[in-house]
Length: 203
Image (tube, rainbow, N blue to C red; front, side, top):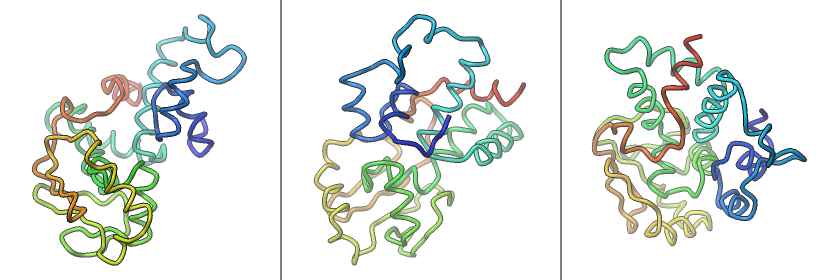
């Protein structure tokens, strides 16, 4: 599955809204794209196919490469405790994920773009690596000179309507967010059967 293709098509293939346009497309047509998208045969599949789909859904929501996902799973499986919890914590404490969850960007793709172009600060210092890990009490904000950029003006206007996650303390006025603590799986709005992802890489 090509993660770099059109996001509307990818949203329909995976059955999850990856962008606002993808959400509108799913409301109109919930079936996967293609001539047989709505047939029962298309919806059936082997255990391998179901596990593969969950892995692809997780990758798409964080927009990360296969090699990155494999490395995250390897680290999670070597940590103490439940590897499912460890995996979601590794992914959700990425800088790009926090920027997106906080509403500083409308999509994970925008979050990665903003970070790469040095629009985002961590504890007052510019960071241009989307995968940088954050720890509790780190503060993420938009660089003052960037606040007038149209994309951030739109994000600020939409922030109130965005779902608030309990592990972030957001400020619309300052366009910032503080990571209060490392979240649990039950608190993260990720659409994926996480155990299946671990099982996929354990084969």
